[in-house]
Image (cartoon, rainbow, N blue to C red; front, side, top):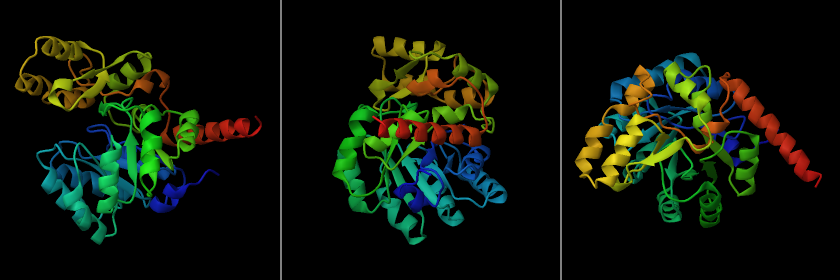
Length: 312
């Protein structure tokens, strides 16, 4: 069995964390991943605090395994959501789109593990000094909000820069990706796009079908001028973002165009004018499987790869 420091830190069986994807990573998916031996994550996104509280309590009712909540610091409800996860004593907190610094001591006082998603070495060093438990080094191959560096480039530099465990994210969908991440010095992986096509994922079926049809070059990065670029499947909405970029439109027009589009895709199934966030590995997603089978296949394939490498 492949066990790493991250397994001991989070009390999980396998070094696999499910990515926190807004309106996609609900309690149902998080519980399925946690029950299968990974760490499931409920995504807060821009949802209000009571919605997140209900998801947390739903998860608590159907699993005794550890799970986490992903906080998105661009949310207008972030202070209320932080208060909620503190009150509910969620075991693990992952964070994105901002610095969790001012909340870290509150999380630590309650025995909660704090694992920020980071795009750079400088932020990794700063957060280590602030006392986080581990880091998720996320490459630009990821779906959703992205940085500039690739996973292959970012992960080893972060590993060399800090003394806490590093989890690799971006462009990972199978056992080969897990072994590659371990070779780069990571202690585990975060996987998002592959888990969208878990049977327990409650995202609209049209989103899943779009993933199953996608090829290797079907994603595009939108919104770079805003400072918050997002990787999505190419569709009519992404073409509108490209039009704004060509026209050098003001930031307000980007914000107006993007408002509510993620929820439209995830909940209502609008894959033409919805924001269908997807990583570059979406072309490797070719079937819908239970989360347990996805994880078991990843681990089995990883062991096969490691055995093959040991014979070279």
